[in-house]
Amino acid sequence: NLRFTAALGGREATVEPFQLALGRSDLGGRLKVERFDPPSLDFALAARHFDLDELIAAAAATGKDAKAKPAAGPAGGAPPLPPARGTVRAAELVLRGLLVRDASLRLTLDRSGLRLDDVTGALLGGRVSGSAAVRLANPDSLRYECTLKVKGIEANELLKATTPLKDL
Image (cartoon, rainbow, N blue to C red; front, top):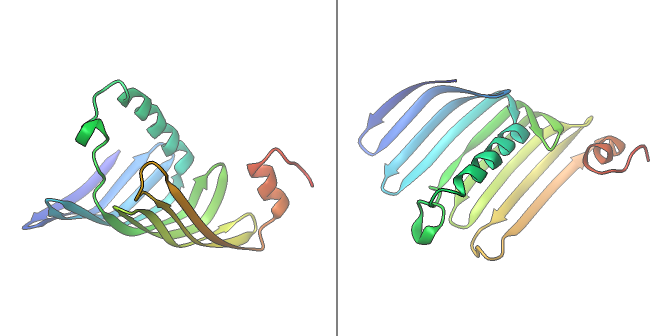
């Protein structure tokens, strides 16, 4: 289910406001495409409920179907993603079965990789904040970076949710 209003002018297109329902997730906000050759994306997204587990599973299923089709990018690879920057806010965000409340972050995607800054949220009775990055400069060797500050989280609940360990 998708609803939006779009405006096209000169060297940019804006979709604002838009609302998108995907499974249990609902997203809304603003999307702006600047320059068309090459394009650059700027966005502000908000959701009452954003289930990343559900979306990742759907993308994985779609990816399996896409393997049978020829790729559209250079040298048989996937087409490059355009640079993007923006904010994401969610009253509830689900990732790996964990519910994060009042989640927010700034996202930047460019040639060097994906970066998440100012990540904040309430998790398992406490708070989490920090940043994360996936460096794509060398496609043969991805580099992951993550700096998180965790305060007041129920450690036993975190272990139960993410490992086979129970009731320590």
